[in-house]
Each structure stands twice: as structure tokens, then as C-alpha cells.
Image (cartoon, rainbow, N blue to C red):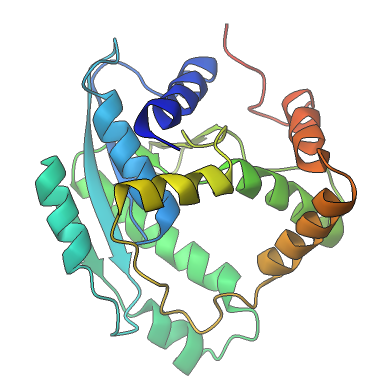
Length: 240
């Protein structure tokens, strides 16, 4: 996928759900993975012509595994002329060494989001952009069905009243396969996750289920996404 096509998906999401307003300062959460780097590139390109003027800043929460090389990402941000901040934490030590969590993802995500929100407030941002794509939307819905017994997924836009921040997800119309294509085409500096739980999570389990369903019943994922769009899940009613 080329940049023009990526921007068309991002622009549609931004317009459909009013994700960006005049004067926004948006922090783009950078994990180092393919999704967040694609989002950074897309938003940096969008701001050049989008009717509402906005600014972006990149921020990474370093979990403290000690083997994450972020210099290629810093170089990319320099190339894009985007301010880049790294927040150093000891989340990995707390989750894996001290707490020895058997299901570490929940606590890690909670602590990571807390560190990120605190940092972006100090940076003067009013919004945070997460790089969740279409597959993430569907997988989260299935996770909720299987483990919580409800039809639910995250919204395109969420206001966090405790921090006065708004979370936006501009990649919600983009398939993971297209993200991979974009990263390869642009040769973006993807950093492999240092987390020992990577690839062994409930989300990975659900991802494999979806892959099998799609193989046996082509179009399953798109039909699930359509069901989400047409549902009564809070936040999925398109702004007119």
C-alpha cells in the first residue's frame, strides 16, 4: 500500500468520527512496531493539507527491558521534523520480576497508558493517537465475546475525563496486511518487541481463530467489522 491510499483511509476515519479539531496537539504513541510508525507517517503527511490545523508529537514509553534500540525511530522523527520524547520506566521489572504476573498484558497496558497519559499532558497535548487498525477492532470484539460475554470493542474516539485527554484511532479502516505493505514499501525502521509474552497472548489466540475463519469463510472479518459499525456500541455512531 502506498502513502496516498493510507491517507485516504486515515482521512475517512478522521472525517467520519471527527477525530481531529482545529488547534489540536496530538501525541502519537510509538511502540516501535509497524502500526505506530505507519500512523506517525500518515498523520505527519495529513497535517500538511487537512483543513483543521493540528500538530503532532511522538512519544515512546520505554518499558525497561533494556534491549530496545530506539535510535532508528529518533532518526525517522528527525527526518519528519517531529518532536520525539522517550519516557523511561521500570514497568517490565514490576510486572515480570516483582509481581511475576501470569497474565502480564493487563497490568502492563494499564501502567503503560498511565505513564503515557502523564507524559503527554506535560508535553501540552490534548489528544493521544493509538495505532489500532481494523484487525485490532475485530480482535478486541472477539476477545470481549469469548472472555467477557459481551459484544463490545473500543471506540474510534474516547474522552478520558480523569486526565482531560481524548484518545483517537485514525487507522481503524486500515487492514493489518495493508500496514505491513506500507511499512515494507517505505522501509520504516520497525523495532521488534522485547516483551517475552509477545506472540503468546490471548490476542494472538484470537488472531489465529480469525485467520482460520477467514480461510474457510472468505469475508468473515469484513462482515464482523460491518456488524460493529452498525451496532449500538458506544462511540460508533458516525458524526454527521
